[in-house]
Image 1 (cartoon, rainbow, N blue to C red):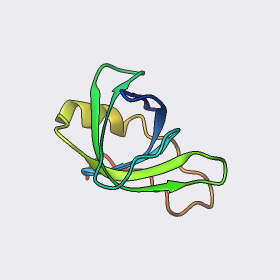
Image 2 (cartoon, rainbow, N blue to C red):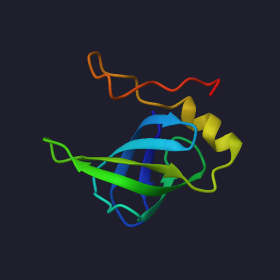
Image 3 (tube, one colour):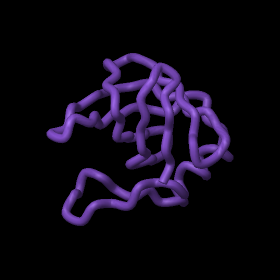
Image 4 (tube, rainbow, N blue to C red):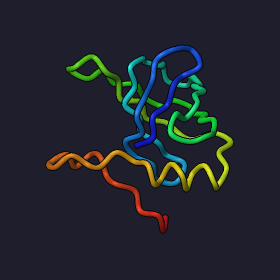
Length: 100
């Protein structure tokens, strides 16, 4: 699982990565159009995301959808290997395929 600590505080887990599109479960919200920068805790690397949507969940967390900015191929491959497994019955959270 890829765990991220945001520079401005808070943390997130990677849920989905498909091409440049990314979905994270975050402890903090971020408005559409904003840019978040964070450090991966499981591997070295800086994650930069431009946020498209931020949706509050019933448990108080936020699902952030956006796109990766300036991500190297190496980091993207590490992220693909760290995606949180899909929950049974949750069709909105697809597991990425390495061939994409």
